[in-house]
Image 1 (cartoon, rainbow, N blue to C red):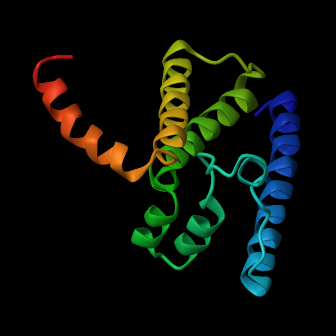
Image 2 (image 1 turned 180 degrees about the horizontal axis):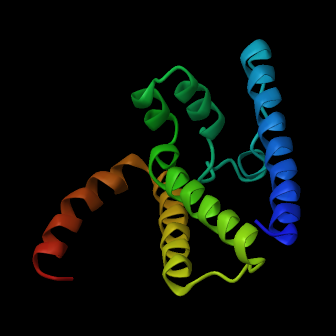
Image 3 (image 1 turned 180 degrees about the vertical axis):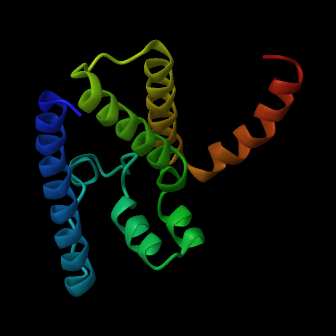
Length: 146
């Protein structure tokens, strides 16, 4: 391993360690106090953002409560793990090559994850009767190729 790679590895390791430490402290704070960071989106607009419930989902995951995590936020077990894998791949690539360039397949996957996240943010704020109606329309539309 050459010296440039070692320097990047050391620098990135420090950043990751700080982020993990901050996350750990925040998790302990939430566990002890029951208080988390309020969602500014929800405070201002009264709507759930795509990330609302993510802290509860993370706490549920620390107890291996997968169903609970999924009930708090569907993205916690779908989009978030994929995003973590992509970020780890990008970190490894940067440490090895010093390049932050995102290859096309990863860019496409990130775009799809963004679309899913925005769609989830919209869907979770629709009235239940609209969702029921859509659940009846969508399968029929898909059957006809719409």
